[in-house]
Length: 567
Image (cartoon, rainbow, N blue to C red; front, side, top):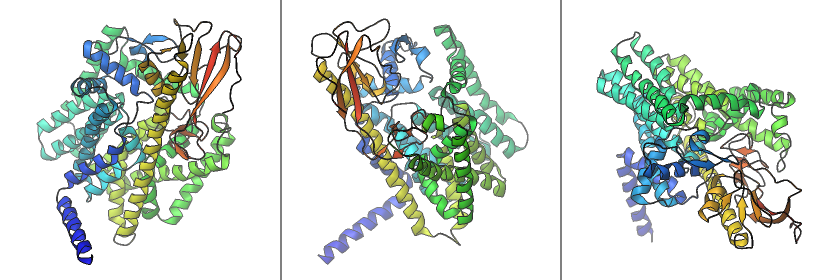
């Protein structure tokens, strides 16, 4: 037996040694292992919008948003509903046409994008720090990366193009090779056509180039490529839809933000919590690379901001009456993660202050600009907007570890922090997938139980619930379609854009309960989790007693025959 165990360990050691010499293969396998269990995740949140557009593109490739959709309670043009450019939809259209439209096929296509992003992070980290595998793995094993990677939305595609644009830009400047700079400009354009925030690469890389070269020159010209592409996109969409979609998205972000009633201070505190929680490995590593006194000071500052934000009403009006959690527990989670978020910003500032070179300036502007947009520029704070932070923060903390390791913390504590962060990230993405599964099960259960009765079954709500209700043949309620006497109306409680019907013409009739995540969730007003929109809660994920997904079924036009069962 001893010989067998010894032989087994020797073979394992040989495999690990072989993989250590092939870091890119190791990272690919790690990425596949991280995402593999979640490749059948049901569609949820805004996934249906991207899939509907992709299906439309198959037959109308030059008119990606030329169809109607009910997303806000009435039928509206898709170009008016969506606030993202269509490149991710074209990618899904290609994947769907080749491999089919199953959840597995579409998620497998997005897995390729995640692998591309991880390899891009590794390539970039080889130039910016001494442990590129650790940096790439630290980016991969964060909640914000894993949760964004199991969706079908545009965020991971943006990150992949973003990373490779930065890689070719840095290499082009260092080697004086124009073709790399031109390729970087093209990749910036692709990033912008994936998600509008990709355009932020233009000022970011411009600042890096000026700091690197010290004066303007022909190297600036490739940055005009994405500017021209955006201008053409604005012109083309205006010609198609009577409104340029680039400027329309910018207007939406600025005008919609005011409707959520959170001050700049409240938004900043929430964004710090999202950054610290979404990049949990960095928060755990902060315990190693910052002195206890510095961490205590940061926690004190965050606590003060939190108290002021709540006392001033910025957060208390929004989150002060969460049904499923106490203010103390909510505050403890927020302060812990927001302290991590503050440590992330401080790491970027300190790195730039000490190094004062083009690389540190790039990372500092990358982190500061992304955080500022997510906190103050976007329509609402959400985890997806902070995804571009992940590679820069991972590199920053590896750089800081390299400076601290000789005198402090050693390899074992670093490994422990990475493992703890990875375990948390996997738990968070599993909870998000359970939420998506519960949405699908709710729709299927509602259809099975009440879809065949006399009258029609309608529904409100969107996200995955809408996708799977429509897949069964049921229609969303809303003008011009209105439920009639004897019909039923299903409304999921943990969903968006729902309005209870007039109590004079509709009566609660039945309630469906479906278990989702139990003690950790990404989306629940009861626990304060709002990964996809901080309208749901001030945390990217939250621990607590997560209630089941609940669907109320209303009977239209007459008193119910039976009382609504207790939830």
